Image 1: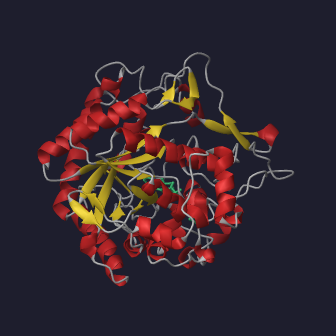
Image 2 (image 1 turned 90 degrees about the horizontal axis):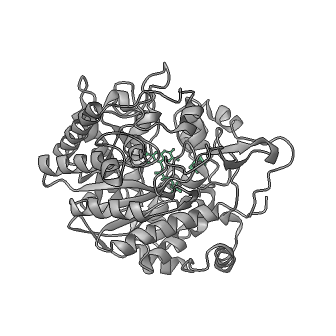
Length: 488
Ligand SMILES: Cc1cc2nc3c(=O)[nH]c(=O)nc-3n(C[C@H](O)[C@H](O)[C@H](O)COP(=O)(O)O)c2cc1C
Ligand code: SF4
């Protein structure tokens, strides 16, 4: 391979040199003390003064009970989110507004036949208990719930996929074995889902969540709708139509729960569907698309869809902000069709492909997209994504982004699975423990792709010692022949 994962770079100067080759405008703060100071600066969020700049991204575990209640694994993960010391817990994990909107049979969901209120209260209690365990104050913490419908990627029972598509995307239809003229959700179905989003937000509010996230990312229903240019009727066509459902949901929540803050996690640019190239030892390449403009991705130039185009995402965020959305969590792409972009990694998940170039490029795409949103809408609270690949250098780069006005909070995902106390150690100015740093091996993505619960099998003892750990390890893609050589 002709890229060095950041963990192999042994000095800030080596990291600066790596950035200089790819993105000379990006950099990092050099010392632990500098990073601690910057990430430990208070920030005004939801009318409160939160004590630091770390945010925990939503991280699903494919480990809820089939009735939608949390299992001991789920509760442990939420407790770890509290133990992290991060001031903001964005969503906890994707919580389906309906049983048929789950992405897997072990996703948390609003179950009218179950004790959903009790489940949500237990999750909140776990985060707060985790915060107390590390000597922190639960009042210094804001916790949201991420509301989702998985749309095209719904798989609510072991019987298999039950996609609810809102657009006819020919490339994804081919991947999923759907006929080109497959059914799409009717406008009435979408209105019923809108009401279910509002209902679930009201429940989250009554239980005590500080905000809800209307999930608009990663290929799920509301995100797919943003690219449905060819969909007829009120929920497709121009940006006004494509964003109508999310705006109606936000309006519905604002009307029903005027005191409940609303955030949106948005894939501001989709990228294009990728596939593994057998002639290049499994390195990723754009999947073949029909000729002509590509009309099924959001935040890209239809005539050159590999090129991000953020005009529409900016207009959407402006519209959401005018409705009272206070927080935006910027993310990119989808873990299904472009995992190298959505979660940059040294090693792909079992159903993925080797990165087509140094994954640092994809980290840079996240940093740049977040900067654009923050700079265009400086009054919004903005959270950035895609940091875990940076490993030892995560805090230094995050601190630089905060100091230079590129983001308000540094969101972290996989790093808290392997090392929940990472933010706490950084904030205390301690050198992170090398053996606990996420090395982006992707086992936490491969496991659920193969029907197993997610977790950090290589580094977290609670997963490393499970009987299925060996099976997860065996899932790691090892290309035939020599190691792949991603293009730099
Ligand atoms: C195991 C796993 C579960 C995830 N679950 C969710 C989820 O429920 N909702 C969501 O918006 N993103 C989810 N993500 C994406 C992360 O929130 C995050 O965007 C991604 O991992 C990139 O951040 P990182 O580089 O810090 O890991 C998940 C990622 C992983 C690896
Ligand atoms: S399995 Fe662990 S080390 Fe690998 S990407 Fe996930 S959190 Fe990181």
